[in-house]
Image 1 (cartoon, rainbow, N blue to C red):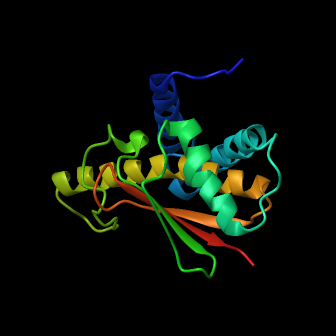
Image 2 (spheres, rainbow, N blue to C red):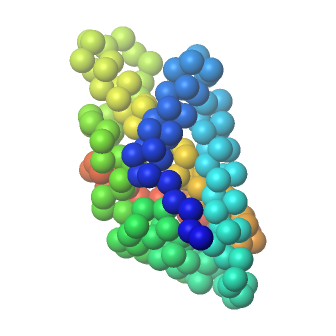
Amino acid sequence: MVREVSESCMDHLLTEIVSTYSNSLYANKPELAARRIEAIGYQVGHQLSERYTMDRPRFSDHLEAIKFICKDFWSELFKKQIDNLKTNHRGTFVLQDNKFRWLSRVSGDPSVELTGEAQDPSAMSENKAAQTTGMHLYFPCGLIRGALSTLGIPCAVSADISNLPACSFVIRIKV
């Protein structure tokens, strides 16, 4: 029996996690909120990867594991594969999702630079929107890192958004 969770339920859960950690629990410590959100994603990714690879042989190299993330893992989570995979063949992979579902309802310009200078209210609200959008990306970064960790691949994962709802995840394999 396959168990699934409603997409809207997952969307709401992620929104509540980000809201709770960044606005309530760690309102004055965004770095700590980001680490906690990423840690939750890591744990979920770790458990999902164990479940999805239970009946598979071990992957022979990093590229095979990354392809698993792009095709099978992403399909299980988002009902679609990653749109583009690039690598420099030296341990860095870029996964591009042109319509990342968890960002499809986020508005604002995420490319606005976050600074501590005094600004007009509209610029401050744009900074808050950019910071909130960024917070939403720590969970999927943790998912990817947790899944790859289960596959025996220690890595660092970061996200880049230049044009909502497109998103790139940069995976750097640790040697």
